[in-house]
Image (tube, rainbow, N blue to C red; front, top):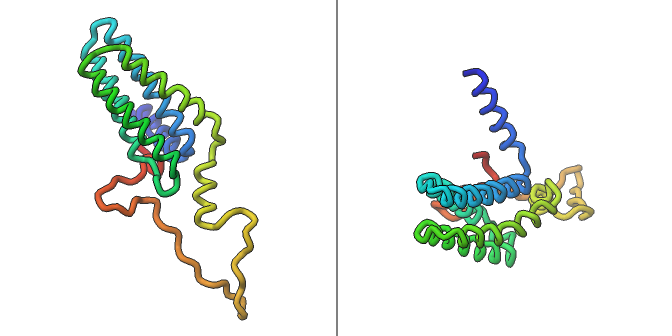
Length: 175
């Protein structure tokens, strides 16, 4: 019992301190692993395992899509959204058709994305978020008023979406 609590706490700490880039890499790796396992399940006749793995992979794709920040990501976010939409539809077709070519198609799309995310230095997203709040590095500090007071600045906005009913960004909360 105590061993399980220790493992759970370790995982919670690991997720809570993980960079966004590392989390995306892990999500891509898990999605690909789920699809590879789904193919193995299909080849061995394990329909339950196949469905479970495809559904899990599809949920990850849906979370990745939901975590996109269109205000900051611009064209990249729109392109990723189109890719995630394609992957989501492929997962649906895979569940219906049970054709391993669809799973391999998803893996072929995800693999270069995974490799690209692995190239991004850890902490890049956090640094960009800090720069949005503070301004770019090297920017002139705010002028000081007579009396030694700096002018008031707006408080940083919370990381949650402003649209009512939308879940917080997956990459900003621990699972």
